[in-house]
Image 1 (tube, one colour):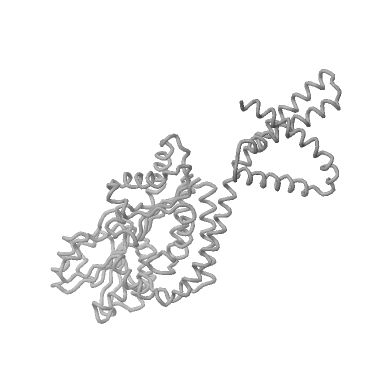
Image 2 (cartoon, rainbow, N blue to C red):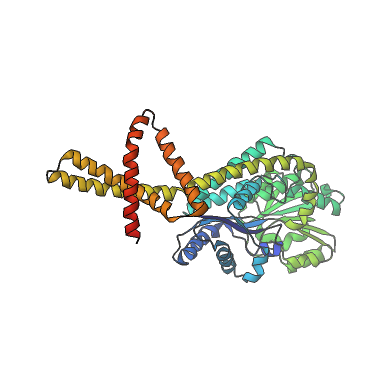
Length: 457
C-alpha cells in the first residue's frame, strides 16, 4: 500500500500555471472517475483511493495505491487531463509519499501551509474535497482514516495554539494595498464580482472603511443581492459590467469561472471613460478572472493572489512561536497515524494465516469424520487428528528455520522462541500440561522437519 500526495501550490508554481491545473468543483467527481479508470487499466492494478483538493493556492491529488511507480503515473495523468506537457508541469510538482503525505495534510488543514498563516478557509475547502470524493465513491479505509485524523489535528492545533491570532487575511491585504493607491477608501466606489466566501470576507473589510458605494455583480442575482445588502450595498447583473466598469475605483473579483470575465478591451474602455483616473483591481480567482495583460495598462493597478502574498507574509513573523507549537502537535499525530498504518499492513498476512489454518483444520476434520464413520477407535482418531494438525501447523515455521542461515537464522530462532514462550505464559494454569506435551511437540517438529525436507527435495 502506497500513500501519496502530488500537487502544486503557491510555493512551487506561479498563478499562471496553477490556474491551468485547477479543478472546478463540478469537474472533480468525473475527474476522480477517470483517474481510477486510468489507474486500474495500468497492468490490471486495483483502483486507488483518491481525493482532489483544488483551491486558489493549490491543486493536490491524494491517493492510496498498490503501485510503487505511483508518482510518475499520477503526474502523467494530471498533465494529460489538463492538456499540459509533462515536462512543463513536472518541475513544479511535489510528490510526498507515506509519512510526508500525512504531515502535509495535517499542515494544510491547520493553516501552516497557507499563504495566510493560520487561515481557516482551507479547512472548509478540504472538507468539501473529502465530501466530494466520498460521493464519487473514491475514498476507502486509508484516506477516510487520514482525513478524519487530519480534521482532528486541525481542531487541536487551532484550539491549543495562537496560530490564527492577528492573522493578516487576503481581504485585509487587499484593503492595505488599496490604501496605498487612494488616500481614503471612503471616497471610492467599490465593485465586487462574485458572491462566494472570499468576496464576503473582502466586502466585510472594505465595508469597514465606509466606501462611497459598494456594489456586487454576480451571475446569480439572488445571491448577489444577499451579499450586497449584508454590507449596505446593492447588486447589479453581471452582464452590466462592460457598460458600468468605468464607474468604479476599486474592483475585486473572485468567481469560479474557468475563463477570464474581464478582458483587456473592457478595461481599456473603462480607463478611457475615467479620463485616466486610476483603477485598483484585485483578482483573487484561480483560474484568473481578469486577463493578465490588463496589468500592463497605465492607470491600472492589478494584483493577483500571489501579489497579495507578500503583504500577508509580513505579518507572519510574530506568530512563529505558535507555529513551533503547532508543528510539535503535528509531528506527534503523524507518528500516531504511521503506527496505525503499520498495523494495517499486517492485516492481510494475519487474514491469510487464518484462512490457511482453517483450510488445514477443515481437511483434517473431514478425514477424522471418515475414520469415525468406518468404525475406527475414537481415541485413535482424536490422536491422529491432533498429531496431523500439529505437524501441519508447525511445518511452515520449521521449514523457515531450516531454510535460513547466519544472522537471519539467529533472529528467527529468537523470534520463534519468544513467540512460543509467550503462547505458554499466556495460558495460566497450563504449565504442567505444557511441560508434559513438550516431548510430543518436539517429536512432531522432528517429524515435520523430516517430511518437509523430503518434500522440498
